[in-house]
Amino acid sequence: MPSSGVTRCGIVFDQYALGRAIQILVLTALERPDEGDEAGTAQKQCHWNEIGEDRHAAASEALRRGDEADLAVSVFLLDDGFQHRQVARDLDLVLIDATRPLGFGRLLPRGLLREPAGNLRRADAVIVSRADQIDAQELAGLDAMIRGFTGRPPIAHTAHDWSGYVTDAPDGRERPADALRGHTVMGVCGIANPQAFEATLRARAGRVVAVHAFPDHHRYTGADVRAIAAEARQRGVDLLVMTEKDHVKWRQIAVSPAEADRPVWRPRLTIRWLDGQDALDTLMDQRLARP
View 1: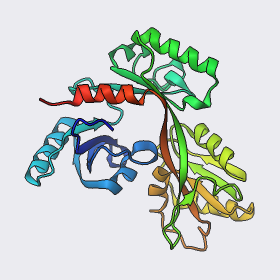
View 2 (view 1 turned 120 degrees about the vertical axis):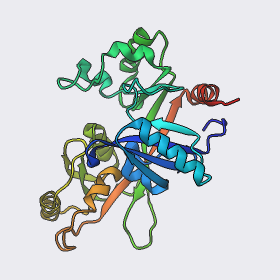
View 3 (view 1 turned 180 degrees about the vertical axis):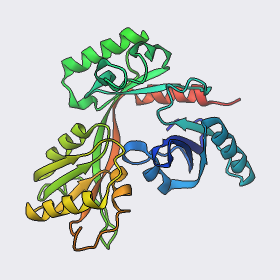
């Protein structure tokens, strides 16, 4: 991370589970939360969280509370904040998923774009994620398209890796990255890009009998859990694999151990820099430095 003295970070989320309220999680250091960078997983590293009706009010309260507790917030990181132009910012970073760049080229609801692609020119830098999941020719074309919008190439390219697996085993140990090779598994996810999750799962597991992909931010029900558990038993599945973001909601469903008797493993997501990390660190040092 940059050496600009960042010690506490307020991560600002749109909290869908609270009726589109704003939630701010205050963390020590600018640590990277697990898969999805979402509130349920980030909260494990959290000093406290602030709930508000708008970003400015919640951020102001977080600053006040931090000063009173001698835990001053050094920087705010806005999740999905690019389109919230009423919020002043020191640095605008845009991540583009190489496996489906620019949201199929259409605005919501026909595509995934929240504003026209030409507005990328407002970004201080663009990072291409999952750049390892497309071939070199496709990546060169994507870089050229980004340059056409911004006037410069992406500052960095990254890959998503699974470095291991979190389990609920009594010994509390994480399993290594190759631990799925001998298992028959079933995937479960409710995320924005289920295809990338499935591709990684199939590359890592011995046998994948099915992947149940729900809509992003899906709130699991008892019926979901029972149906998936029953199918897993019927098809000889050793364990279920889901993201930590999904497991936060999955584990809240009250079902008997007999109904949900398969272990649940969650990949430990890490970001691997293919290039550009030093350039991004330099840019962040410059923008976040204080006199």
